[in-house]
Image 1 (cartoon, rainbow, N blue to C red):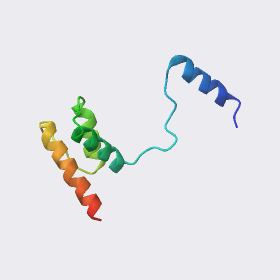
Image 2: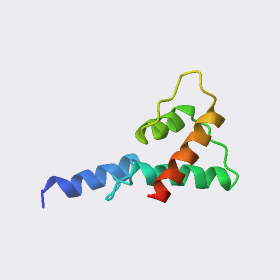
Image 3: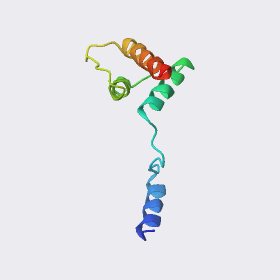
Image 4: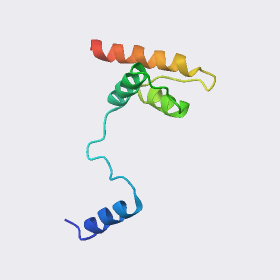
Length: 84
């Protein structure tokens, strides 16, 4: 263990920065979380986040694409992932 690790943890707590995620989630899991939040009644506020998730699934997203259309494409991509 590096002697700076406790210091880094202390500074994160002091300045309110969250600790890095020990197990980063996959693109598919991020998409599932997004769809689950929308289905639970959440409204996505950041269209760039939706676009990044769609692109991480291999979808091409036009700048002119409506957010609702992109969300539907993400749903379709997740259904394809589940069928594999």
